[in-house]
Length: 479
Image 1 (tube, rainbow, N blue to C red):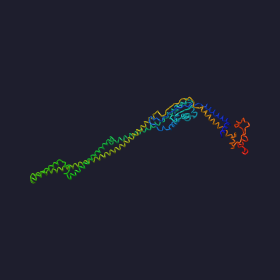
Image 2: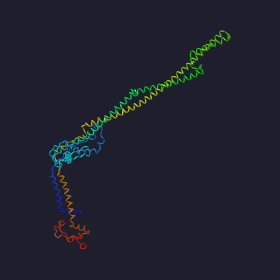
Image 3: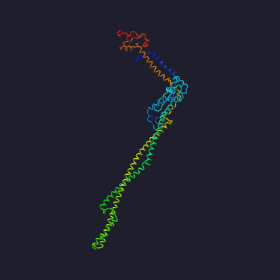
């Protein structure tokens, strides 16, 4: 279809188009003026998602997610909030509402649920795209009723948000309370078991007694080492005293033995002098020899006495060593036994500590949930309360008129094209060329030139030539 054909169709169907256009526009305006005026009141609610929780002291990650705002919108549109509005406004005591409910439902069902669904029909909740503000709008024929319902929905949403936070906290508080009692019993049983174990093993302090015994064990070990060295030394001296007592250091260092040896040496020197001067049979020489023999006998006795004391010391040293070995073994057994007792005690102490830790954690959580169950604050705030609107929000006459003009124009054009498709008559030379796919050689002038301008618009029966051109007669006859 060419542009000239399109305008020809519009000129031919102008009357039908005008009728359709007027029907649409006038009908829309009539309906717009006939509809009752409705007023929309809007309340703004701020959802704080960045401030930390006053009890938990932290911002929960899920609060900052985009789905959180969508969830809040669904909460406002929920039946729970709507029933809360019915309770806040005490609509159940309204005779008109009760009568309407009985008329529509025949008294079946719940009035609050029915009223909640009725109120939701005129509720409009819109979250802001770039902020955390939610607009709660309500539309009705009464501006005061609209503002009252908008504020009631906002307050019901705030109360519901607080309930959704407090109710789980109360349940958790009850759970933690019972759990704390059971953990307290476990803690008391562990402490009783530890006390009984300490009492049965005479344990006053945890590590003090073991430290003392460890120090004593160390001291005994040191004494044994010293005594072993002494025993080795006394053993070597004893062997020397047995084999060669004269060369024994104790004998050599003995002052009596040293004095006797000095006297013997002096007497022997005198004896040698007297023997050379007086002879061996002289009485003085004999007397001197008798003295030397007596001194030698005393020296031998003193040597035996000193070497005997070395043997006694060796026996005493070995006896002390044996005693220290026994004491060390006994002390080692005692320390090992105390360590075993301490290990058992540490197990009991850890049981007490674990029970105490679990009890403290549960008590802390119980305290937090108790605070949350008694809180009266929430992260939802009423930013702007709804006020009575002064202008009606619907019907919008100007917008409806513009839409009616646009839609009427489209419908009128569509009707014109539909009528043209239903009417297959040839009206212009272009129709002939398009129908037969042959060029037009000439166009005969109209016998009434004055009416030529509206001739294409004139409704007439097709002539024989036109019928031939449209295919109603054989193509050969037309040619």
